[in-house]
Image 1 (cartoon, protein in one colour):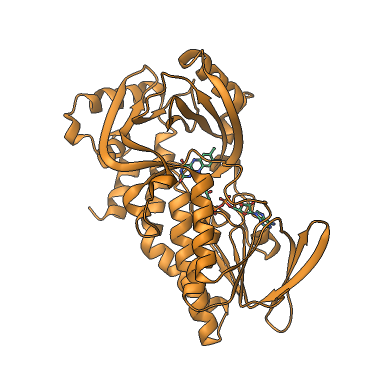
Image 2 (cartoon, helix red, strand yellow):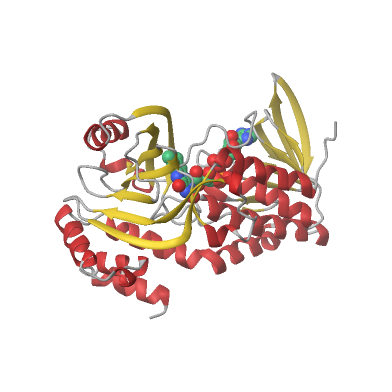
Length: 390
Ligand SMILES: Cc1cc2nc3c(=O)[nH]c(=O)nc-3n(C[C@H](O)[C@H](O)[C@H](O)COP(=O)(O)OP(=O)(O)OC[C@H]3O[C@@H](n4cnc5c(N)ncnc54)[C@H](O)[C@@H]3O)c2cc1C
């Protein structure tokens, strides 16, 4: 079995498989290591993405999609629903198939893939090569590489091993819990987002359709606002009230990083991508597409650095720069918006919902929602205007 590669990618989620794919397309020899036996299983995700952004990476084949949304409904604490209709733009994926498809694309580009293989340590020797220990079925294997791309998700240990400061404050990590339920009354055309202190303090509760009476109902809560309650008790209370006859089919839990991107995502011969780099949209908790964008940028830069024979931190910084050019600005804006929105009292949330629901549907845009929500906070509005350049 081959033991020397140009690039080792650790973690086969959307960020890792995309990084591997684009590094191979750029001409590098790549190994992708994933500890699970199958890509995308279990699915710790509500699977919502925007169709337009997805098109950069693959054709959204019907088998990858559970539902096409007509829009989203934002629901304030007093039950006021604000409908945002953006036909054709929201998709609910079938991540089991989607993640596998991304792995297939990486394989097709030439990536060697090892499943059921857990990376247990990394070490950089004097020859500027990484030695990665991989445990598979109780046996230990070692591989060497010039570059490591750490795509090992929210709990990322690889970044920590390499000396990155990956720890997040409780304020910037949401506890996510999701049930998949069967209930005929789940709206199969709209995603619904519920806000308020009683339902989801410091975050929101979602109900996304999955087709044929099935829905994903979950909460993402600011870990520092739980006041002794658990994500599970919030979710159970909601279910009891809204879907008392629901049958719970499955349950998944996971942390969601809702911070700005880590200050450092590149070191000598190493790059962090996706949740490992804290690249999730901090307002929505969506990380699939951001992870894929980062994966593509990192994979391309890594391949080009290998070709040039320079895998130093300075060379790999190009990835950090490109990430900030492409997403960094908006990522920071979403963080500011999140910080503003989680401070709103239930009364303010209701007031915003009333203002928005009085507008004609074509004027209810996401941007207007944010600016209305933050209208009483001139400091935040100023920061946002600065970021958006007006
Ligand atoms: C409840 C919940 C709902 C969500 N809903 C949405 C949503 O609707 N839309 C959206 O865009 N995002 C959503 N997200 C976020 C989204 O799931 C993540 O942002 C996305 O999966 C990140 O991709 P990634 O490739 O960075 O990491 P992951 O998908 O977490 O992949 C990391 C991979 O690394 C592997 N790994 C870890 N350590 C090792 C190791 N030592 N050796 C080998 N392999 C390792 C893991 O097994 C895993 O497969 C949600 C998250 C949660 C928790």
